[in-house]
Image (cartoon, rainbow, N blue to C red; front, side, top):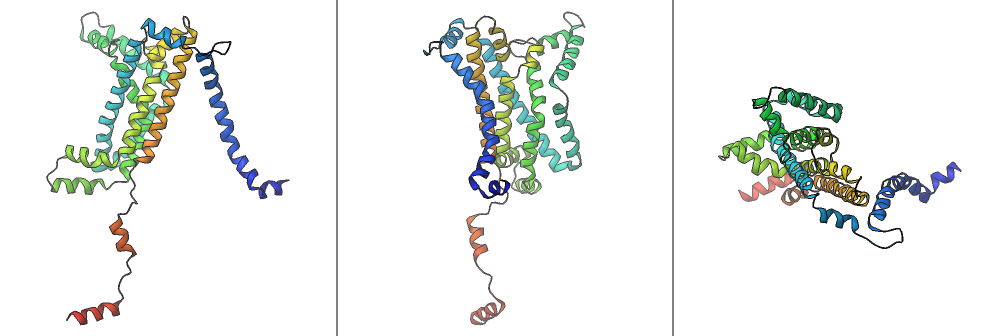
Length: 305
């Protein structure tokens, strides 16, 4: 039996695809069930009552806009701050690279609920200074429902372990010191070199960081719910008590959006990644031409003379 399994290519292909098929069934079954419940009645007729109820009430607009603004800000701030920091470490402080790696990996070790507990303690200490004090004003600004900056900072920290690895790996394939020295000889400053030379060569890691941060921020629930900030996932949870079909519909759409963003992040990282081993056509042509032998070279010199 074992010899038959080893000798049958069809059986080997079947066993290779079996875990993937089981994983696909495990993931797609709840999603398809939710889609069926969201858009089909018990009699099999198609319905959009869940989406219609959400659009008519208008209550989804504020949480949706808040989540979009927070997600975009978190993605932009993360890339704008992390890329120059990693470039500086690669150029001028390579010994601190391990220290930066450890610091950026800490959010992966510390649970999100522990980070929120620490944030809550800090915010309470600021609010305890009394009305009109600087601490109270800072607390109000950080937890503003219009623009909750505390969520932006928290999401940036939560995404650091994944985005740092991607950007650090992309920069490791570049001769950064040579690029910066060549740019400075040509009269370009640090900002110009970073914007026009370095970032185009790490488009893949940068785009991955943007998509990944946006996907994590727009679907995050624990931090926003603990801090009592009404984002889209928090609104989805409260909606289930009044409009269950609408909450399931919104949950499916949010889940699909997150999957699409993660897929876009993966594709962009692989498609636009820097390829250090790429060789130009001219270099390949020169490499293909055989080197002249010493005898041929001497005959050529004799003819020339």
